Amino acid sequence: MKKIDSAAQFLTEQMDLFQCPVCRQAFQQVENRSLRCESGHLFDLSKKGTLYFLLKGSKNEYDKEMLTARFQIAQAGLFDPLLDSVYQHIQNKETGHLLDVGCGEGSQLDYLTKLGLKGQKIGFDISKDAIQLAASHFTSAFWCVADLAQSPFATSQYDTILNIFSPSNYQEFERLLKPGGQVLKVVPEKDYLMELRALFYRDQKERQDYSNELVIKKFKEHFSSIETKRVRYQFPLTDDAFKDLMKMTPLSWGASEAAKQYAMEHPLSYITVDVCLLIGSD
Image 1 (cartoon, rainbow, N blue to C red):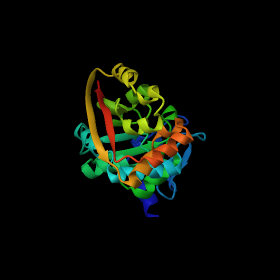
Image 2 (tube, helix red, strand yellow):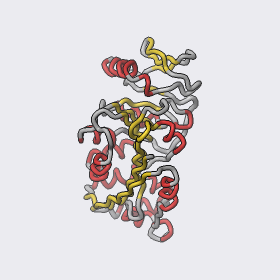
Image 3 (tube, rainbow, N blue to C red):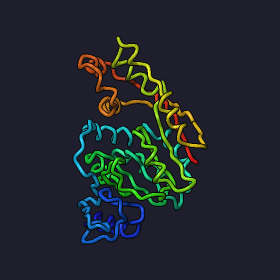
Image 4 (tube, rainbow, N blue to C red):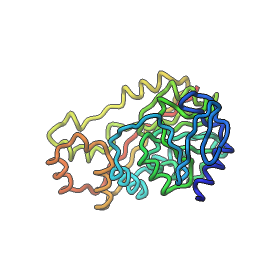
Protein backbone atom coordinates (compact mmCIF):
# COMPACT_ATOMS: atom_id res chain seq x y z
CA MET A 1 0.00 0.00 0.00
CA LYS A 2 3.03 2.26 0.29
CA LYS A 3 3.08 3.12 -3.43
CA ILE A 4 -0.59 4.00 -3.61
CA ASP A 5 -0.38 6.15 -0.48
CA SER A 6 2.69 7.94 -1.83
CA ALA A 7 0.92 8.54 -5.14
CA ALA A 8 -2.18 9.86 -3.35
CA GLN A 9 0.01 12.32 -1.44
CA PHE A 10 1.69 13.43 -4.68
CA LEU A 11 -1.69 14.07 -6.31
CA THR A 12 -2.96 15.98 -3.28
CA GLU A 13 0.10 18.23 -3.36
CA GLN A 14 0.41 18.55 -7.17
CA MET A 15 -3.23 18.54 -8.31
CA ASP A 16 -2.63 21.74 -10.29
CA LEU A 17 -0.51 19.77 -12.78
CA PHE A 18 -3.54 17.84 -14.04
CA GLN A 19 -6.93 18.44 -15.64
CA CYS A 20 -9.84 16.09 -16.25
CA PRO A 21 -9.50 14.52 -19.73
CA VAL A 22 -13.31 14.20 -19.96
CA CYS A 23 -14.44 17.77 -19.27
CA ARG A 24 -11.09 19.62 -18.98
CA GLN A 25 -12.10 20.95 -15.57
CA ALA A 26 -9.66 21.16 -12.70
CA PHE A 27 -9.33 18.27 -10.28
CA GLN A 28 -10.78 19.06 -6.89
CA GLN A 29 -9.62 16.42 -4.44
CA VAL A 30 -8.21 12.96 -3.84
CA GLU A 31 -11.09 10.95 -2.38
CA ASN A 32 -10.60 7.32 -1.26
CA ARG A 33 -7.52 7.10 -3.49
CA SER A 34 -9.43 8.44 -6.49
CA LEU A 35 -8.86 11.75 -8.24
CA ARG A 36 -12.14 13.68 -8.55
CA CYS A 37 -12.71 16.64 -10.86
CA GLU A 38 -15.13 19.53 -10.35
CA SER A 39 -17.72 17.74 -12.51
CA GLY A 40 -17.47 14.53 -10.49
CA HIS A 41 -15.42 12.37 -12.87
CA LEU A 42 -13.26 9.87 -10.98
CA PHE A 43 -9.91 8.30 -11.83
CA ASP A 44 -8.70 5.53 -9.52
CA LEU A 45 -5.13 4.94 -8.44
CA SER A 46 -3.84 1.44 -9.10
CA LYS A 47 -2.11 -0.60 -6.40
CA LYS A 48 1.20 0.38 -7.98
CA GLY A 49 0.33 4.06 -7.60
CA THR A 50 -0.37 4.79 -11.27
CA LEU A 51 -3.35 6.50 -12.90
CA TYR A 52 -5.17 5.34 -16.02
CA PHE A 53 -6.49 8.38 -17.89
CA LEU A 54 -7.46 6.81 -21.22
CA LEU A 55 -11.12 7.26 -22.12
CA LYS A 56 -11.08 4.28 -24.48
CA GLY A 57 -8.81 1.32 -25.07
CA SER A 58 -5.75 1.75 -27.25
CA LYS A 59 -3.78 -0.62 -29.44
CA ASN A 60 -0.05 -0.41 -29.92
CA GLU A 61 2.68 -2.77 -31.05
CA TYR A 62 4.89 -2.31 -28.01
CA ASP A 63 4.22 -5.57 -26.16
CA LYS A 64 5.67 -6.70 -22.84
CA GLU A 65 8.53 -8.61 -24.47
CA MET A 66 9.57 -5.56 -26.47
CA LEU A 67 9.31 -3.24 -23.47
CA THR A 68 11.23 -5.64 -21.22
CA ALA A 69 14.00 -5.83 -23.82
CA ARG A 70 14.08 -2.04 -23.96
CA PHE A 71 14.33 -1.87 -20.18
CA GLN A 72 17.19 -4.37 -20.11
CA ILE A 73 19.29 -2.69 -22.79
CA ALA A 74 18.61 0.72 -21.23
CA GLN A 75 19.94 -0.61 -17.92
CA ALA A 76 23.01 -1.84 -19.80
CA GLY A 77 23.65 1.79 -20.80
CA LEU A 78 22.62 2.06 -24.46
CA PHE A 79 21.10 5.52 -24.05
CA ASP A 80 23.31 6.91 -21.27
CA PRO A 81 25.52 9.25 -23.37
CA LEU A 82 22.41 10.60 -25.11
CA LEU A 83 20.69 11.24 -21.79
CA ASP A 84 23.83 12.89 -20.40
CA SER A 85 23.46 15.44 -23.21
CA VAL A 86 19.72 15.85 -22.61
CA TYR A 87 20.36 16.49 -18.91
CA GLN A 88 22.79 19.31 -19.68
CA HIS A 89 20.06 21.20 -21.54
CA ILE A 90 17.24 20.87 -19.00
CA GLN A 91 16.37 24.20 -17.43
CA ASN A 92 15.37 24.56 -13.79
CA LYS A 93 16.63 21.11 -12.73
CA GLU A 94 16.00 21.79 -9.05
CA THR A 95 12.35 22.87 -8.88
CA GLY A 96 10.93 22.64 -12.40
CA HIS A 97 7.92 20.61 -13.55
CA LEU A 98 8.86 18.07 -16.22
CA LEU A 99 6.62 15.92 -18.42
CA ASP A 100 8.08 12.92 -20.24
CA VAL A 101 5.90 12.29 -23.31
CA GLY A 102 5.88 8.63 -24.35
CA CYS A 103 8.11 7.64 -21.44
CA GLY A 104 7.98 3.92 -22.23
CA GLU A 105 9.10 1.76 -19.32
CA GLY A 106 10.58 4.73 -17.48
CA SER A 107 14.31 4.07 -17.80
CA GLN A 108 15.18 7.40 -19.36
CA LEU A 109 13.43 9.56 -16.77
CA ASP A 110 14.88 7.45 -13.98
CA TYR A 111 18.40 7.88 -15.37
CA LEU A 112 17.95 11.66 -15.54
CA THR A 113 16.83 11.56 -11.91
CA LYS A 114 20.00 9.71 -10.95
CA LEU A 115 22.02 12.42 -12.70
CA GLY A 116 20.45 14.95 -10.33
CA LEU A 117 17.12 15.99 -11.86
CA LYS A 118 14.73 17.10 -9.13
CA GLY A 119 11.43 18.97 -9.15
CA GLN A 120 8.13 17.34 -10.08
CA LYS A 121 8.44 14.65 -12.76
CA ILE A 122 5.58 12.93 -14.57
CA GLY A 123 6.09 10.16 -17.11
CA PHE A 124 3.22 8.95 -19.27
CA ASP A 125 2.66 6.56 -22.12
CA ILE A 126 -0.34 5.28 -24.04
CA SER A 127 0.83 1.73 -23.28
CA LYS A 128 -0.49 0.29 -20.02
CA ASP A 129 2.21 -2.40 -20.12
CA ALA A 130 4.90 0.28 -20.31
CA ILE A 131 3.57 2.16 -17.29
CA GLN A 132 3.20 -1.04 -15.27
CA LEU A 133 6.86 -1.79 -15.94
CA ALA A 134 7.88 1.75 -15.01
CA ALA A 135 5.96 1.58 -11.73
CA SER A 136 7.42 -1.85 -10.96
CA HIS A 137 11.01 -0.65 -11.32
CA PHE A 138 11.11 3.06 -10.50
CA THR A 139 9.87 5.51 -7.88
CA SER A 140 11.63 8.49 -9.46
CA ALA A 141 8.47 9.94 -11.06
CA PHE A 142 4.69 9.77 -11.08
CA TRP A 143 3.59 7.36 -13.83
CA CYS A 144 0.30 7.41 -15.72
CA VAL A 145 -1.38 5.99 -18.82
CA ALA A 146 -2.55 8.87 -20.99
CA ASP A 147 -3.06 10.20 -24.49
CA LEU A 148 -2.14 13.74 -25.58
CA ALA A 149 -5.23 13.79 -27.79
CA GLN A 150 -7.35 13.74 -24.60
CA SER A 151 -4.87 15.32 -22.28
CA PRO A 152 -5.05 15.00 -18.48
CA PHE A 153 -2.36 17.67 -18.00
CA ALA A 154 -3.07 21.26 -17.01
CA THR A 155 -2.36 24.40 -19.02
CA SER A 156 0.88 26.39 -18.56
CA GLN A 157 2.24 24.19 -15.78
CA TYR A 158 5.38 22.60 -17.25
CA ASP A 159 8.90 23.96 -17.52
CA THR A 160 10.20 21.10 -19.68
CA ILE A 161 8.63 18.58 -22.03
CA LEU A 162 10.74 15.57 -23.00
CA ASN A 163 9.88 13.99 -26.34
CA ILE A 164 12.37 11.17 -26.89
CA PHE A 165 11.74 8.88 -29.87
CA SER A 166 7.99 9.50 -29.63
CA PRO A 167 5.35 11.37 -31.68
CA SER A 168 4.76 15.08 -31.10
CA ASN A 169 1.67 17.21 -30.66
CA TYR A 170 2.99 20.76 -30.85
CA GLN A 171 -0.34 22.46 -30.26
CA GLU A 172 -0.63 20.50 -27.01
CA PHE A 173 2.99 21.20 -26.08
CA GLU A 174 2.35 24.93 -26.46
CA ARG A 175 -0.68 24.68 -24.18
CA LEU A 176 1.19 22.75 -21.50
CA LEU A 177 4.36 24.84 -21.32
CA LYS A 178 4.89 27.70 -18.94
CA PRO A 179 6.03 30.98 -20.54
CA GLY A 180 9.71 30.44 -21.36
CA GLY A 181 9.34 26.66 -21.13
CA GLN A 182 11.21 24.26 -23.38
CA VAL A 183 10.71 21.13 -25.46
CA LEU A 184 13.61 18.68 -25.72
CA LYS A 185 12.97 16.35 -28.65
CA VAL A 186 15.24 13.49 -29.72
CA VAL A 187 14.99 12.08 -33.24
CA PRO A 188 17.18 9.53 -35.05
CA GLU A 189 19.94 10.73 -37.35
CA LYS A 190 20.92 8.96 -40.56
CA ASP A 191 23.31 6.49 -38.89
CA TYR A 192 21.01 5.48 -36.01
CA LEU A 193 21.28 1.69 -35.54
CA MET A 194 22.74 1.49 -39.05
CA GLU A 195 24.45 -1.86 -38.44
CA LEU A 196 21.13 -3.45 -37.52
CA ARG A 197 19.38 -1.89 -40.50
CA ALA A 198 22.08 -3.35 -42.74
CA LEU A 199 21.46 -6.80 -41.25
CA PHE A 200 17.69 -6.66 -41.60
CA TYR A 201 17.61 -5.14 -45.07
CA ARG A 202 20.73 -6.44 -46.84
CA ASP A 203 19.02 -6.50 -50.23
CA GLN A 204 16.94 -3.34 -49.77
CA LYS A 205 19.28 -0.38 -49.87
CA GLU A 206 16.38 2.07 -49.67
CA ARG A 207 15.34 0.57 -46.31
CA GLN A 208 18.85 1.16 -44.93
CA ASP A 209 18.64 4.91 -45.45
CA TYR A 210 16.90 7.34 -43.09
CA SER A 211 16.28 11.08 -43.16
CA ASN A 212 14.87 13.23 -40.34
CA GLU A 213 14.62 16.35 -42.51
CA LEU A 214 10.82 16.62 -42.41
CA VAL A 215 10.64 15.99 -38.65
CA ILE A 216 13.20 18.71 -37.93
CA LYS A 217 11.49 21.12 -40.33
CA LYS A 218 8.19 20.58 -38.50
CA PHE A 219 9.85 21.21 -35.13
CA LYS A 220 11.37 24.47 -36.33
CA GLU A 221 7.97 25.79 -37.40
CA HIS A 222 6.80 25.92 -33.78
CA PHE A 223 9.60 27.63 -31.82
CA SER A 224 11.23 31.03 -32.06
CA SER A 225 14.39 29.89 -30.30
CA ILE A 226 15.94 26.63 -31.50
CA GLU A 227 19.19 24.82 -30.78
CA THR A 228 20.25 21.53 -32.34
CA LYS A 229 22.93 19.13 -31.19
CA ARG A 230 24.04 15.89 -32.79
CA VAL A 231 24.97 13.07 -30.44
CA ARG A 232 26.79 10.10 -31.99
CA TYR A 233 28.59 7.18 -30.36
CA GLN A 234 29.09 3.43 -30.59
CA PHE A 235 27.86 1.08 -27.90
CA PRO A 236 29.45 -2.36 -27.36
CA LEU A 237 27.03 -5.28 -27.41
CA THR A 238 27.14 -8.54 -25.48
CA ASP A 239 25.20 -11.49 -26.89
CA ASP A 240 22.34 -10.75 -24.50
CA ALA A 241 22.34 -7.05 -25.34
CA PHE A 242 22.21 -7.85 -29.05
CA LYS A 243 19.16 -10.06 -28.49
CA ASP A 244 17.51 -7.26 -26.51
CA LEU A 245 18.32 -4.80 -29.28
CA MET A 246 16.67 -7.10 -31.81
CA LYS A 247 13.50 -7.23 -29.71
CA MET A 248 13.25 -3.59 -28.64
CA THR A 249 13.43 -1.80 -31.98
CA PRO A 250 10.58 -1.24 -34.46
CA LEU A 251 13.18 -1.78 -37.20
CA SER A 252 12.38 -5.49 -36.99
CA TRP A 253 8.69 -4.98 -37.82
CA GLY A 254 9.31 -4.69 -41.54
CA ALA A 255 11.99 -7.37 -41.76
CA SER A 256 11.28 -10.83 -43.11
CA GLU A 257 11.63 -13.90 -40.91
CA ALA A 258 14.61 -14.96 -43.03
CA ALA A 259 16.27 -11.58 -42.43
CA LYS A 260 15.69 -11.80 -38.68
CA GLN A 261 17.09 -15.33 -38.63
CA TYR A 262 20.15 -14.13 -40.55
CA ALA A 263 20.63 -11.33 -38.03
CA MET A 264 20.43 -13.79 -35.13
CA GLU A 265 23.14 -15.88 -36.79
CA HIS A 266 25.37 -12.81 -37.30
CA PRO A 267 25.24 -10.93 -33.97
CA LEU A 268 26.74 -7.46 -33.83
CA SER A 269 29.59 -6.58 -31.48
CA TYR A 270 28.59 -2.89 -31.39
CA ILE A 271 25.83 -0.57 -32.53
CA THR A 272 25.86 3.10 -33.56
CA VAL A 273 23.61 5.55 -31.74
CA ASP A 274 23.23 8.69 -33.86
CA VAL A 275 20.56 11.21 -32.91
CA CYS A 276 19.64 14.86 -33.16
CA LEU A 277 18.69 16.66 -29.95
CA LEU A 278 16.34 19.55 -30.66
CA ILE A 279 15.85 22.24 -28.00
CA GLY A 280 12.95 24.58 -28.66
CA SER A 281 11.48 27.48 -26.70
CA ASP A 282 9.64 30.75 -27.29
